[in-house]
Image 1 (cartoon, rainbow, N blue to C red):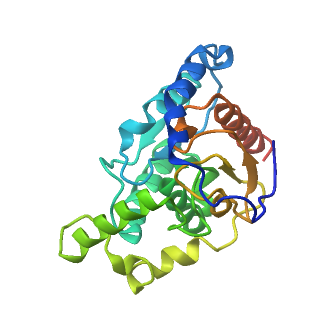
Image 2 (tube, rainbow, N blue to C red):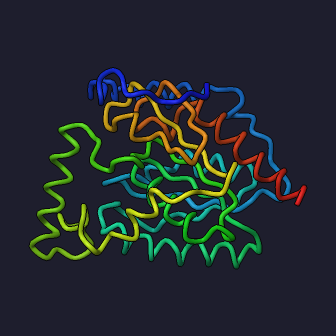
Length: 252
């Protein structure tokens, strides 16, 4: 169901709701559409970007489904998404442009949570190299609109960056110069009809209102935050978005 978020209700649902992940995965694996996926001719390449503290392995089920559909899939190369956003986007840009050059066509971006924010920045900076964008529970409106448990983890990671641990974000990334361009990318317009932002009012990690992007189609699903990469309804939205950009490419 497509919906416009409103500023009502609790900002973040109870964290225990994230225990739904196992049930969401089980329903996906039993889903007839998921198991009998049709291979698409000329399926566009896809770049997958995981969420905060997660690595490429967290998107294994999604990667396998995309490959069965015929997509050439490239992963982010991250073991844990904890780096300074501006530096991470720079590295992902090399992945994006390399995949677009190798395949000879624009790339579809899919990012979960923080990965969706990183993907959005890529789409803003490289519109000709991007065919479409789907953000799964990504706090575009406020990267710190998260549960207290997650916020404590962010602050702990930032302290490691503050004392000089390499490859880790620091407290200066929030409003310092290092990530000023990235923050601007999160507010910049996107090409009409190319982006979809999924959100869940029962998200136990991110405030769902921060996931509603004014420049993207907002689609509500009843999913846990972590489960967005394995929820049957999410895969139906992804399938429609991927097919829509494929048909648009055929029609010029």
